[in-house]
Image (cartoon, rainbow, N blue to C red; front, top):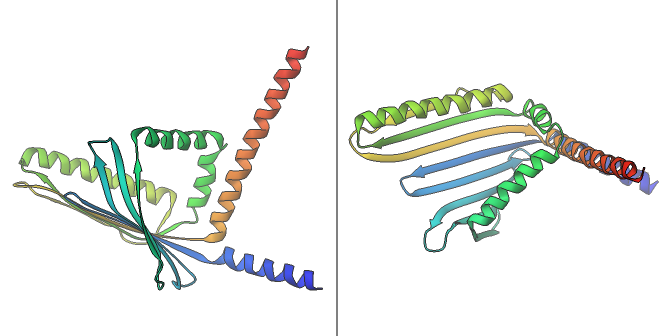
Length: 226
């Protein structure tokens, strides 16, 4: 009886976790040479919050590489750790290589992510930019490219996700001085169960790919034997 009761409790907690909504807020701000990234996760009606700060991104010239200072913290607690990491060009290329290999290993990854994004809702989308290089003609060209980029990103988001808020997009040109400032805020919501299901599908298709390779390898060896 105890085992059955424990199984029921575990199943109930699992179902509760799957039904809970997760809110993710992506914040990026760039002002001249000062950059800041912040990603905040909220769940359980906002009681549980986890924030990742990336306040500094610096490119080193003396010893080529990118230095990132990031801080992770649980809100309403005193636990806050700051860590500095340096990535060499070789390490950065290795990261991109592993990411490409991952996308190639998972069969139908596009379809899996497309199904997941159908359950993602965008409840806030703000993108404000002020830009100029001191030349009116060149600034006008950059502003035009900026509008094209923003509308393209917004079109992709609205195509694959549910856009439930009116986007706020602005570009302020500065024709007489060099300025580079931007602020981006995006808030998305989805149920944890949908994310778990997407993860299971990724593992399933990855394993299917591995099994297919094993079968192909076995077939080749068998043919060589003949």
